[in-house]
Length: 507
Image 1 (cartoon, rainbow, N blue to C red):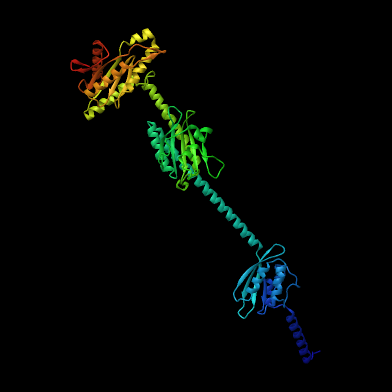
Image 2: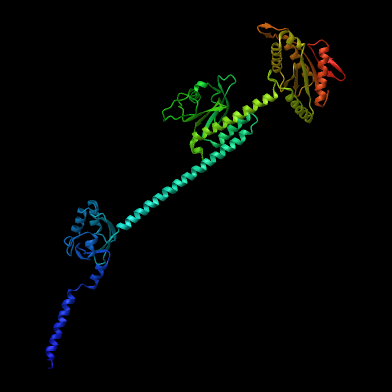
């Protein structure tokens, strides 16, 4: 049975109408795309009304359908965000003002769950704004963690740099101390040592001024040995005027700390000028305090490369102490090997070396010098009649008179027993004769006491030889002086003679 064409056409029209209604109820492609986005998208009209948003809005902003929809006012929506704690009231006012402008901006929302949502607002050409909101919690955490790691890395780098700088400074300090040690250990005398200390302190610690004091022989006062970056403010210091000497260790004075000014510092400053930061370091040699190192800090910024100036100065004091101890020990050993233990005069060994040096020096300048051979008259009688101790007292008295002679550069020696020799550099016949007579007369006039009683009169005999008149070699000069001495003794003693060719001149 054939279908009626009109009925067939009507059936097609009904189907098309159903399709059109179905299509009208289906979401548009734009809506599908918006709902597929990971971001929340909201469109606010020029009048501040929500006209469009996607499904992600509820999830991203943690909202329910009742909180936002088409027709929701912008101010109401933002106020709700403020009430939920997404931002402050001040921020709310700022956002309302920003939405009135025609330039893009962005802001953050702190969700109730703790998530962070970043909002980016872009104005539309015809008015209104499109807002995209994204969950940036993990990204922000990552950035925060990165910043923390970066800060820790920078801190570690700074720390490493500081440690490296400290190590370099310590190496520099060690190098400076090593250099000072090398120079100090090469010193032949305390004078050289003091010159090196002065130069070292001026170069290494220009921001300080100070002095080095050494105990006098009487040990009742410390005398200034050297000073740097200042005049000699004090010539001496009493041992009990310094806290470092009284306490037996280094002492640092700081006006900001609980400490007290040393009396020797008070004496060096006027009442108007108060003492600044200073350091006192005892100088100890072989367990015995021999001096004091005193430094004042004028400008520490001028001490580059020194980490802790007081600690460095204390180490300097220790090295100076060791150097002084070595020089003193060397001097003591030198004295023991070159000086007579009884009289303190040089011994025969030193005399022969001094005579050799004088021969070489005088020959080069074509000058002259004199040699005196001296012998105590009838010295055996003192030992036999009064004992060897009395004889020692006589020898000591003769040595004192020899050392008191007005003769520059004289080298006085005890060459053995009661025999002495005196080397007189740059001395001619006339001056040698004057010195010999001065010595003879001073000894003849002295009165020596032993065990409370006077000893017999002491006299000497002497012989003089002149370089180059009586010889150009050590043995020649010694023989000429001894020959003149024996002639003086043979002629009655208590006199001196000067060698003259084959004969002698008596005085």
